[in-house]
Amino acid sequence: MSENDDVPFNRDYPLAPGVVDRVRPGVRRILCNNPSPFTFSGTNSYIIGEGRVAIIDPGPRNEAHAQALLDAVRGETVTHIFVTHTHNDHSPNTAAIKAATGATVYAEGPHRASRPRYESEMGSSESGADRDFMPDVRVTDGEVIEGDGWALQAVATPGHTANHMAFAWREKNYLFVADHVMGWSTSIVAPPDGSMIDYMASLEKLADRPEDLYFPGHGPEIPDAPKFVRFLIRHRVAREASILHRLAKGEADIPTLVRAIYIGIDPRLTGAAGYSVLAHLEDLVVRGVVATDGDPVIGGSYRVANS
Image 1 (cartoon, rainbow, N blue to C red):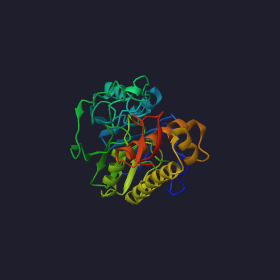
Image 2: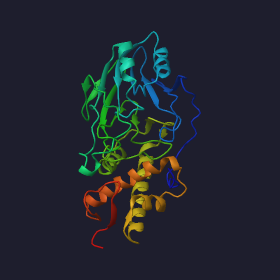
Image 3: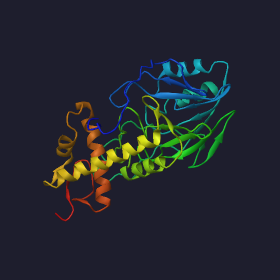
Image 4: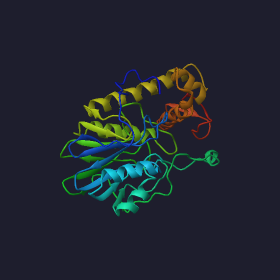
């Protein structure tokens, strides 16, 4: 999305789909061929360790990508599969990889929304969610899962989805951060699937952690990661300020706010931008800064509280 000039994004990512990229010792990366305005050049899957390995995020239901992952670990044993969250570009290939390898699947849990749907939202469908996914083992924040020559700590990072989980390889100071932090763009936070309140709290949590190299679900790795997270926090605070600046001029609906804030946005992203604005508005309504009639929903009209 636009209005990202204050964040040092890196969109230089020449990795071709299906190629095994040994990005760091003990970390291999394979890109799925599912590019889009939301996934950038595609979804990254990661292979951790050597010999007896783990796979993080097998990706969308894509036979070519599943085969690329299996070819990459030919002669090795896949003992663990980690799933960061249940969007359709990250988890559906899990079943195929598990069937081929017999590996145990670890994740926070099945898909769920960050809050119950309001009555006025009941007719809408939440697209992009993998509702068939169920892990073999549900992991909790801080839990450490050990493999052969590696150990990953679960780091709960709700916000993009309620069940979003990053995984830290603390010995190497790496964090597999999925979609919570990406180097190429801001993450989409779309209620009721996502929550801006949770997302901002998770950013603050990551900024205080020691890991300095992030491996995201899309795009290149992120060096000097805590500093980058601080950029993202400031960017989100500035987005909130832009919303309040427009509302100070008078009551507005979400399409009006999007036009005022996202100058030159790719038309394919206007819907997602609207939901990100809604996520900010939900937070502002909870804090009593912004008011609306009824529930804070995508079709609502918003104003500065007490105005």
